[in-house]
Image 1: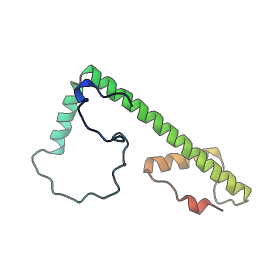
Image 2 (image 1 turned 90 degrees about the horizontal axis):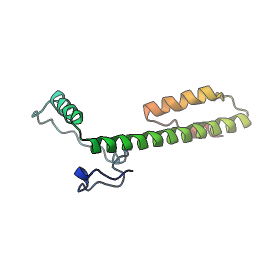
Image 3 (image 1 turned 120 degrees about the horizontal axis):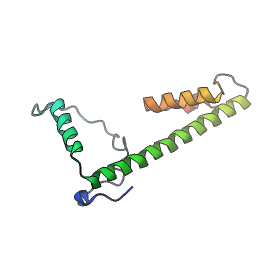
Length: 126
């Protein structure tokens, strides 16, 4: 990750702050909303602040987005290779329960990625 911009250097962030879902081990209890600001007001405020962002912070957020996009591509490629390997193993075991064409594997990976779930690998094991 690139270094934080000078404006945010004093923030004490966890090492994996940029990774979504890393702190979801415990489900958050529901709390009533305070009613002080509506979602629309908050979204408008965030959009206004982002519109007026300084150049250094914009470059930083762009660099972080590029790193995360590259990492997402690596994860998708690894998952695709894993599914292709499973399909090859099933083909060797002469089971026809999984289509082995690369397009169906790609569709399966994309569907899993967008759902943010992984299919149970155990059901494809021989």
